[in-house]
Length: 92
Image 1 (cartoon, rainbow, N blue to C red):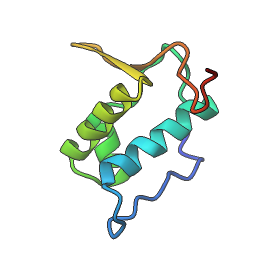
Image 2: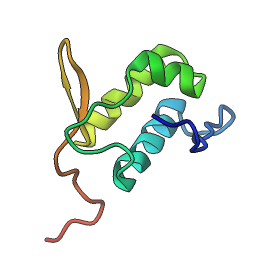
Image 3: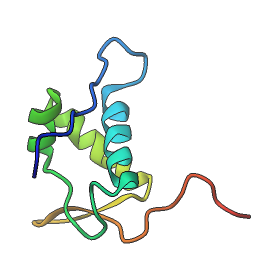
Image 4: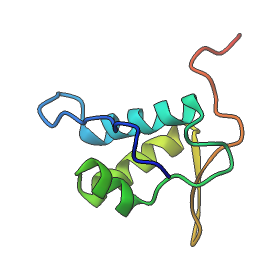
C-alpha cells in the first residue's frame, strides 16, 4: 500500500469527536474506492498509529462504521468493507 496519498488530518480541537472524524475519513476512502469491497480495512492498531489516535478511538471509529453499514467484522480475521455500501441518498 502506498503512502503517497496524504492522510486526512484529524482536528482534536473540533467539537466533533475524533472517532467520528476518523470514521468519516475511512468512509471517504470506501466511497472513493481506495478501500475496495470485500477487502480488509487497516487494523485498529494500524489506524491508531497512522492517525495518531488512541486504539480505543480507532475501535470506536470501527464501531461507527459497522453502525453505518459500511464494514463487517469477522472475529479472528478483521474488518472488511461490505460488498455494496449504502448511499447517503436513498430512494423512497
